[in-house]
Length: 276
Image (tube, rainbow, N blue to C red; front, side, top):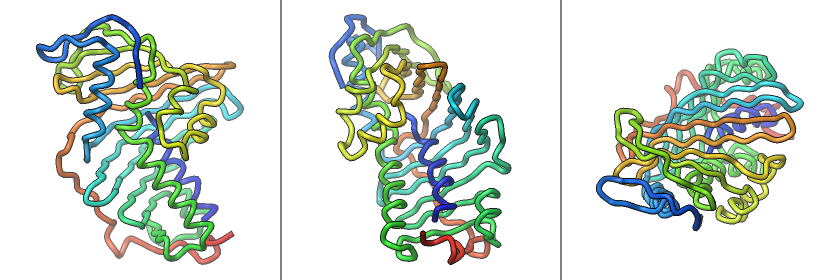
């Protein structure tokens, strides 16, 4: 499982992604005029009602000890009838070094399927996909997979937009078309310490650790006439380290097809990689 953990972390990172009073600026959603802070609140509420969607994601980071990094890919997400995600990372670069073949992770029920050339090399897997079921793992390893599942649930569309509601300076900056849909563009910043207070207490430490060197995160939100968030960008910098995350969303509450890979392409994680 120690070899599998980086692949799971990649999937969680891809979702990373990404509540208040504030500016008096107003923006237009359809024919309704709303204060910018209220519009962000409505977008967060609408995001919380979404049970399925698809997204395109790009994360760029520079500086720090590991140098430049980039993760680019897409995901499908559903929360009902059970949590399921399909994460495709076409580009993965850490410290200027590319991860060959990218990675893909499918989570359905209590099973995670991972496709990664790097994982196969280290784990000695003989099939393109590796399957990990909670029942196959020791108790401490089950906790790691469950933590990954919890991260998927926490850093989803609704969780990301909820962070923005802690902004004290959000304002409307105009209207733009995103993915063929007319949207209102909002911009502002949110304090990491306050944003951590609006998410699940069990995940506050994770958020603060990920953004430990950044006090304020700049964001942009593009919200459509139904207050659905069509695009979110997050960025920050501190001590010569920067990050930029862009996520575009579509297919709200539409059926998604998330299925396990063909059985003949799936192998189990080798025994010597299941425990400590």
